[in-house]
Length: 480
Ligand SMILES: [Zn+2]
Image (tube, rainbow, N blue to C red; front, side):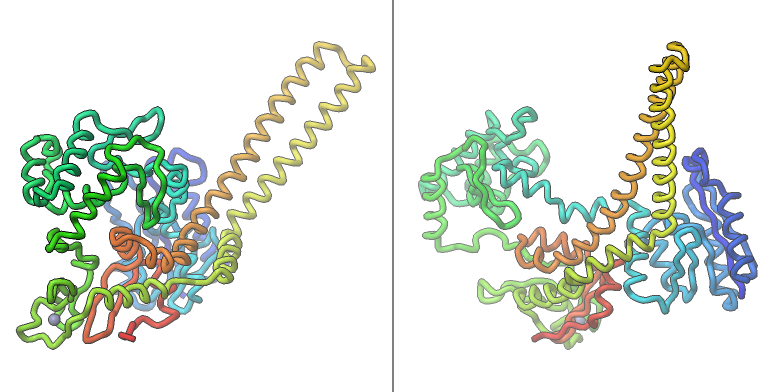
């Protein structure tokens, strides 16, 4: 059986022990020998700060393409092979078997989906992509909200106080916000006129986004100015100082309700730019019908395409179903978490054996120390020898304790990262149902790369590794 070998190192890693190209090659050649593989080519990449392309990787791909008899790659670890999701996507299209020698796993088209998913998690971790994902499940911000602290950037009219960690009224913009409320409550001004006043005040033009009608509407609708705020669809009691009274806020809402033009502001379309036509590939764009219903339609609709309109609510349901597909269930989450830990056999064994040997050494020194203490008491050793040896041993004990701690920490961090992705997969559906439009979009962007719609059916394309989860439950979502 033919195979190729791939090794990679970055210049930064080269300084560290155990990362060198020769040590990777040695391991891989030995593995090939044991498994009776014939190594037909070896590819290496040494990355420097200046040179970021991967010539070896590219050459390997063209070799595999033109040599269909070679269908196997040997590589040390996941993070040696891929640096980003794109690399993974490219390789995923090749029908090849990859041996991750140090991780003890083999991946091919025939691998179980749970294995593929775990592999996906590893790729993500190799790239720290998780930073983006964990944003979605960050619990800290909600905790902050529960404490009455606005967890995001201060809204217009507020600034943040680094000491109290609360937002506080901006001395200049704050009073102007109050005036906006008063003007609108008087019923004498339209949103249009207020946006002109805001422009004239010169207060909001600095960061080049002057406040338009929709912006004014958002301000006048935001309860944060009288003390409450809404975070992720939930209302919280803020601890910050208010800019207006609740009464003024209510007055403004009354004017809104009385207004004959409730849709005066530009409507926000939840899924604009997200769906394309399954027939001709054009964008599905939103349009308001009868002044209140939002419909999405193919931009070629009136011409040649026979695709149909779809209501935004309906589209929301189809997208929710798409998000639901990646839910795995508490039980499976625990199973995969466990398997994830086990899949890191080499790492785990390395950790365990390292910790065990450190503990042995720790106990040994402790015994030496105890014995020497008795010897000192019974005057078998001199005071100066005791001083010297005991301080030496004490230092080593502290050193060992540090090492043990760092091993334990590294292990739990790795595990946490994988668990975060699993939890995102599992909670995405509930999040989607309860989040604001903006959060829904963010979530969709995390999970789906593209969606097409054709005559009542939504065809979602999932991002990795969620595609693997979704595959199991069928990919086509029919209108119910
Ligand atoms: Zn079309």
